[in-house]
Each structure stands twice: as structure tokens, then as C-alpha cells.
Length: 129
Image (cartoon, rainbow, N blue to C red; front, side, top):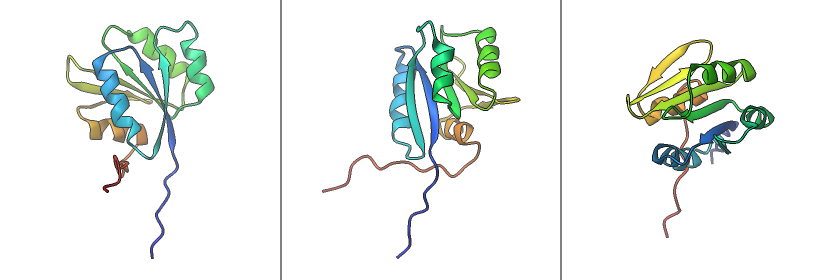
């Protein structure tokens, strides 16, 4: 009998803004067994402090009406070890900031950006009866 290989979980902060895109990403990321998902509302005055207290590996945000280049720069400065992942539904892309800018266009790319590589596990929905 083989034992399951346990991959360490990575904490991901999803900055929420009540968009359909963020709600969908939240549902998808909740099913990934190697991620610990924390939600932080985008409109709280202490957004950066809340994110910093969670010490995330990645910060995921929706670009639509939420941020500008200054906010991305501030996040990179405040959280230098985290990847900042910006979702752009209008351009159908995912921008990843972590010492460089990388574009992705799908869920596999998002998970690769969060993990920094391939080999992501997905939780099963429910056991079959």
C-alpha cells in the first residue's frame, strides 16, 4: 500500500469585490487541496495590514475597477515574498507579479502562478455513494 504524498499547503489571499469572476475563482480555489484560502474584502481601510497578517504565498485580485499600478506596486513592496496575481476578465488574462510580470490565460495558469510550478492537486467534490 502506498502512502499519499502530502504537499504543504500554501496560503492564498483572495481580495473580494463581489464580482462574478472573484466568486468563481473562490469556488475553484476552494477545491484545490494544496491551498489554504483566506478572503479579504477590497474595501476595508486596513487592506494591506490584513493581508500582511495572513502572510500569504499569493494575493489574487480582480483588476476590474479595483486597482491601478500604484496598488500593485504597494502590494509588491508590502509583501515581497508573495506573488501578486491580477485577473483581467476584459483582456482574458492573468498577470502575475513576482520580481517580473508573467501573463497566463486559464485556471491552470492561475494555479501554476500561485504554486510557482506545475503539479497541482485538486480536491474531489464529494465521494460517490
